[in-house]
Every structure is written in C-alpha cells, then in structure tokens.
Amino acid sequence: MKTAIDKAGRIVIPAAIRLRAGLTPGTEVDVVLDDVSVRLLRHVPGPKLTRVGRRLVARPSVPARDLPRLDLAALVEEERNRWPG
Image (cartoon, rainbow, N blue to C red; front, side):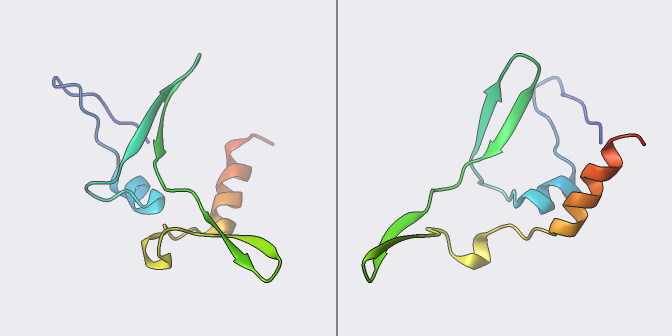
C-alpha cells in the first residue's frame, strides 16, 4: 500500500494496517531510522517474570483483550506471495 506525507509532515497509515497491527488512537510507536528505511514499531511493554513453583515464567504484562489479533496463516501466505516463483 502506498501513502504520502502531507505538508505538515504527517503520514496516514491505512486502516487495514492499523487494524492488523493493533494501532489505535494514543498507541505509542517508536520511529526507527536505519540505512535503507524508516520503520514504525508499536511500543508494547515487555513480559513480566513470575515464579511458578521453582521456575520463572514470562507472562504478558498487557491484558489479552488489548493484544492485536494475528492471523498467522494469512501472514505466511502474504510472505509467500511477496517473492516471485
């Protein structure tokens, strides 16, 4: 999908991408510049370590209802279709 930067320097993220990435108004994103691209990374808190018996287990620190829904089969299919042949 293509989009453009407006005169104020803003960019519109298409609705389908916002929905898939779980981007809602107020979502914090990190803007990363590397050698070949500018990337937006959704800022999410890391997991919390909790003790279960004698083991440490990583548990999400965000409620499940706030996590983006991912269709892994669709993601794999999109990746396959990106490459010719």
